[in-house]
Every structure is written in structure tokens, then in C-alpha cells.
Image (cartoon, rainbow, N blue to C red; front, side, top):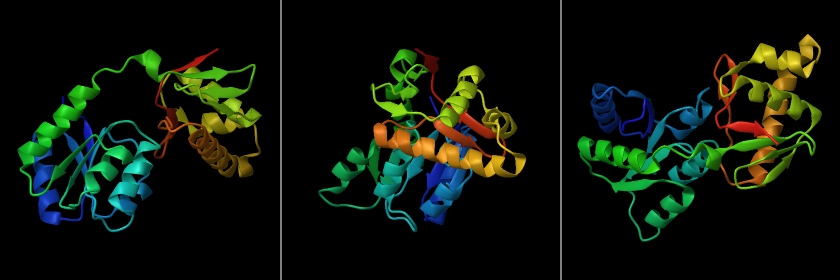
Length: 227
């Protein structure tokens, strides 16, 4: 029940060194970030299978970091922190974390918490996580029913993701589908993806499944159908 990859965000080097080695010994790929800004600047920041984060971090505060992650991914988020206070637990859970452990903790406790979050998440019902492309209305319909108006460029990109069936679509393919001059294609693609993400974020609180695959292209990490 352990995820394949974990982002560990904590500036305590002794703790992260020990925990990462413990998790790696269990077959998990772990990447450590001592600063939350380093995670957000990572080319595949939202592509990890799980996140374990402290709250007292250089860069973006831990609660704000959880809010940002929840706009991009719905995988497990475990907070392990020494921050105490009557409002801390409420703030962490409201931000979107799945569980909160108070330091000091044993590595095995962290592993058990990760397994518990993974087990409770369980295999999701694909129909409950399905996004739909309404070609006639030029809209993307989120699983919660929220609708995002789409431009012609947005439609062209989503058609590519529909055809890809959850696989990564290379930048070259997307640039060709946009049909723009070569010198404008890369900037135009990045701008189109950015604007589409922001419109989806404004329409629904759900995690946006349109994600970057570093050095390759983009992927729509949710079931996508047409209506």
C-alpha cells in the first residue's frame, strides 16, 4: 500500500536523511526538498505519488503549500510537524491534508500513516473522477459539474489529450495541433496551458488534472470523455 514516489518537504536534514533512507529501503523513490519553493520550482512538482510535509518551512508556509498542492493533485498528503496550537490541526485538514502527526515521530509511524492514507483512498470509482469535453458547448465539465469555457486552442489541446487516453502528449504534437508558426509555438503552447489551468481553477475546487511532464510534454491525469 505504499506509493511509488514521495516528495519529502522538510528542512530538518537529519530527519529527512533518516526517513528517506527508511522509505527507500521499502522500495519507495523519495525526493527531499528543504525549501517548499524548491518543490514548487521542480519540473514535475505535482507528479509525485504522495507528499510528506512539515509546516514550518523556508519559502511558502506549510499550510499554503498544502492548498497549492490540492489545486493540482489529489494524491495523499501527510503533515509531520512540531507546530502546535489549537487551530493548527483544523487549518491543516481544511487545507487538504489527509493526516497530521506531531513530531517527534518514529519512521515506522510515518510509514503506517502513509499506508493508512493510501488504504482509505482505495481504488477510486473512475466515473466519479471523470472529466467531460462538451464539444457542442465548447466547455470542459469537471466531475462536480462545474463548466469551463474553452477557446479554439483549448479545444485543440483537449482533443489531443482525449486521443492520448491518459498518456503523455509530446510538446511537438501539441504545437502542431495549435498550428502556429514555429517561432511562436513554444511560447504560445505554454501560455495556452497556463490560461486553461487558471480558468479551470476558478471554476472548480477540484485538483486540475492537466500536468506538465518535465522535458516531454503534458498529460491529463484523469479519465476524459466526450458528451
